[in-house]
Length: 337
Image 1 (cartoon, rainbow, N blue to C red):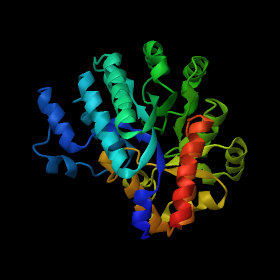
Image 2: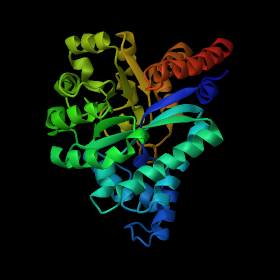
Image 3: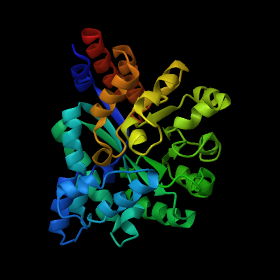
Image 4: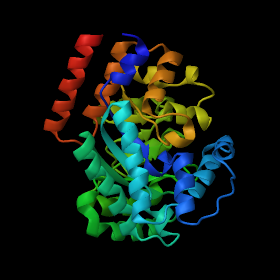
């Protein structure tokens, strides 16, 4: 079996996906028209040309602009369901979806519209596609901790629909320690903590996320390789890193994929996974991330299998569901290795 077909058919989980970042230009135009919102682009082609970033902040500026078309519960449903259609095509069996309430509530959108629209799509995808999912509510780190506390309070009536809390947006100048108290409060409410750390920030940001926020998974974490002691700590804690190759390339976190640290992570015994981050903006869904990083680093089928196995093992599924998916994966690998 050719490597690209192997990747396409490989059962996998996606653990680092921002639902707002899955908003394809075509759907963006449809929703904008439906809501009578003017956007500063005359065509899909013109919008796609704007997806040329020199850093994380460049991307965030257009990301928030795109999210502004989302107004109603139906908009959030359509956005999320469109992602699940892609999941089916990509053979994603389980996904853990990040969403940013503050991106919407701070412009007057009701929290209930956001969570109910997204969650309803998750329920329909489980029934129609047999894809399981959890939701991760992310705090925006460029805003204040007080603002994050407002979001935490808004979320409490919907606790049964939210599995974890995360931390995203502009990393530089917004260290994890800024959100110490809101993460403590979130954990007390039963949310599992995760955080973006070590994408543009250095290894110190990852240390803070581990020691202060008590995270259970590291989003990105590329810069952990700066610090051997940190590598050993991550291994000791048995934490995974949710790596996003095309995102790293597009945001200039790495100069090109040939210089990506993924293979070094595997060689050092770390547990990375492959994810798409914001696929509408970074040039591909999860399979394209697998394909391009495989080609750049000459990854073997065994290494691709290990990356996919990590995605199930380090998901927030219970042991029985992890075992179910891993058995499926192992059977696929046994036949096709």
